[in-house]
Length: 400
Image (cartoon, rainbow, N blue to C red; front, side, top):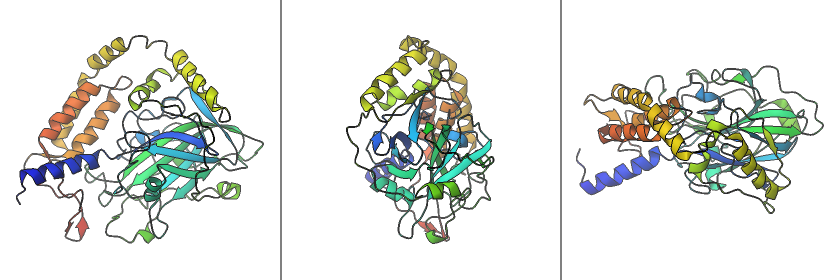
């Protein structure tokens, strides 16, 4: 099969756009009030928007660095409507690739939950409603999805785990082909629930990792070939207390009134979590947006006393991350390779994410990016990312 230079460039451009069309959580809204950019403040945001694919990894818990606390919490009255807002590269952009069809779920756990603890309780889920997927609705709603905190929930500190499950490559299990598999986008926020509720979360629940396995319904599904009405959302049923405490379906976002949306550049907030893990969480109060901004600034400055020299931090990052990048380079040549010795470009991106995670808490952006770029120069491109051709009754990756 031959391609012209122009068509090859077009396909390559579309391919890389699709590879990077991933998503992260930007902020929470409480009863229509924006709590401001949450990365490193009350959201344990990962350093990149890449998905989690290894179902056995601790990153299934709350994504990369998700076990590390951030300095603040968001105050949420029991019974309030929470809006989780997502973004791709910048707030209000394309959110996530439209091809990444799948469900969206939300869980609550005690604030001290750790990876593999069976303590997560599902309070919301939305899959395929007979006409469209939850992700399609998320994109149409500017990256926002609504659900309620159970009105009877006891006051206290909790972790909120909102997750997008993208099915566009789930026709193959990750354990069988690491270049494919379901894509998980978990995001955890720290909440302080207020009110007079007396209902505690169930003593046992789902575990992350642990709940999702190759045999779990909804993990292995061909979204292009199978009837979406037969799809079963992974995980337990939505908690009864959540149903009695309010609707478990999406609703229209209330018009925000004079919000204090703190505009924080993505590149500046991602690095915040590495210096804030030891601080005591500070509650961000939803009713006073102008004060929220000043509180966030104070928290950031008081919880990162060591990071007084950006140059020093950069130098430390560059010198410490040689080995993770090298390890990824070896991995790239081994996994996802074809008979020609080339690798699937998706493997390059997956290894890049692992490299960044391995070099925490000071990500080796330079080394990991160089390794990724080197891997991509010899990668085999997927020429059917836009129009997935059909081969032997299955939709999948066609390698050159």
